[in-house]
Length: 256
Image (cartoon, rainbow, N blue to C red; front, side, top):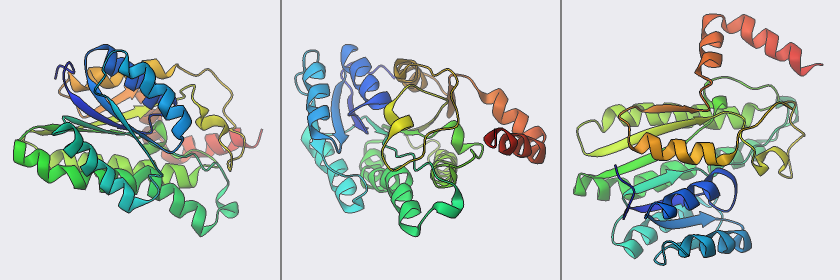
């Protein structure tokens, strides 16, 4: 699709991938709705977006509140007249070994990373189906295809989002509603140093959020479901070739 003139709702838009995507979209003529918890940062993003797209708007709230997540999707639809694209991008890391996780830790991670995308999608899906047009973009992670040491809650949420996206893509074939699944690798965002998570073990290179933003626009122009940004599918293929060996090697690296 051509994003010029499209109405796009971006969840998790106050920083990182969501922020970069908002700029990329509005610079190409899209109208964006921005959703995030941090109102001051979101207002700054909106101000820059409105230089290109004065009709763009923002909604401030906690996507861990699932009823609010559902309501804001409908409010955005009604506010813009319709949505062409919903981008489910909000996420929390919750980096912590499994024996240090609480029930509340896991539930919070699943609410924000998986259940809020589900609720927002199900809110607008009947409306998209009635129009026979629309795009659902789910931003998962490389951690949605392979387990990462000390990140069981995060990986569980992203595995869930990956499976949900695959099944949804099959269910919606030939309806006019398209699904795209984005699997970012190490991206230079503040997810690496959020409060409430341990310091990451990974200290290698990170790609800029703009790479993923451009890749999402490219995904909307393609006919493929899944997009690795950057292209690290070879890592997933290596895991699948020898699951036990791959995981054993990853666990050993975590002990260094």
